[in-house]
Length: 353
Image (tube, rainbow, N blue to C red; front, top):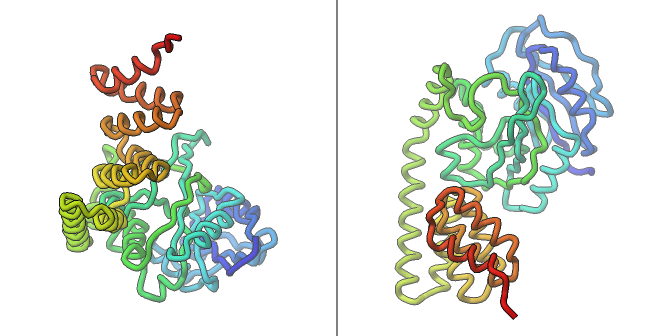
């Protein structure tokens, strides 16, 4: 795949895994790439050749050691590409990572950042899970679900002032994404095409028992963004209230517009998604209504009421197997759920002829 130049930015302290990281860049299917390696360990960093497979490679640095945020900013300043993607020297990308993210951006012309899911790899090379979540602007203020190597973003965001903040500590990438979210929507590519070799800590940004520095960094980021977050929460509440008022007054189309506007701030809010699904179902847009409910369940798997509503719609659509699966999941959480038990009993009772 050809297109705009992409700068793959590698922050490196010369770990033994650096070559594997570079090999994963050399194997990219996207044609127009430059590789910029920041020697964050200073002059002790091994010298690299001027090529990474078919791509040109530049090794840059100050000659001294660079902290995480400083190395990231140095990489951004050295980049020539219209788009950038990071890769730390202990992680690696799948061959279609850059191409897939560029395709996601092309399919979402209003977005200047696209991100993928991230596969978590432990010290033994075993997959331990996947981080993958649709874009939700408010939820991003609660926790970081975008790994530093998962996102491809327009360098125009940097020109507008997005930088890595050293005060954010080990959460400098989270703070950077929050800066970007003030300037653009994000496109989510629902596949894990980058790989994080996790050593310690928790995959979802929650603190590990001995993760004092990490918790301090998370506290610093949340403190920095408190006013913005509270403003978004207030805007969201006002829009939802307008939607409820329109729906109460019988203006379904206005209510739908308000709910869609609310979801641009909080895309996974189960109650708003359920209300929008109800409006869509009432005008027989069943497919989109069901898509709303599936999204609500993705972000809120404990919402058994949403699962039951979706199961009922699956039954009406003739998808009994899908409904059975949904209801079984409800009953694993709530064995005494009356609605789920009744629907499942009807589904599993042979029809008399």
